[in-house]
Length: 208
Image (cartoon, rainbow, N blue to C red):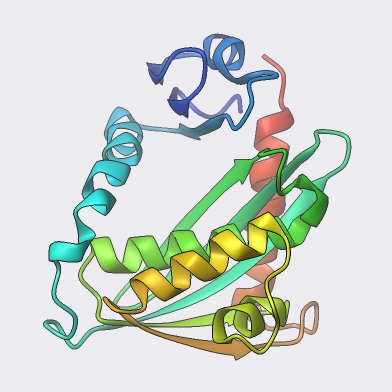
């Protein structure tokens, strides 16, 4: 995380923006369900903290107003050493947007990289709604991303149940489509999403 200058903590011993990984680490290490992310600018860190507030009022957004479609490539990764999962997303519309993050919620850690990929899909949907897209096409390499969402697979674990609840709630606001790609077969954006997810874990492991 040495390249990051600001660390936004949404959930930890203390929340807010910290200017060093050491300060951030004090708030999130061994803290249950810690939620944090590093940024290169203060504005990005502030936007990250404000996003949840914006997301809480999303039901006021009416579906179908913009006619815009977002294409999102999502992938997940997992580090057994760090006991942490991550996601990487490549968002394509008029320009390319990259988002990523990590998580360590105990109730989904057993799902390993799948937890990251599901989180990536949800974060892409959040981003699309906040930015007033009315449809999103999610490209993924793990088939459960689509099959749990459509009900083809029964959600049995807490993590998959939360994912299905999320999809069912927000598909009323945005049209969500899924397209499976084969992982590690040279698909440019899928490979990029994979690298972004791994990079998120690498950044989280860097010591000051």
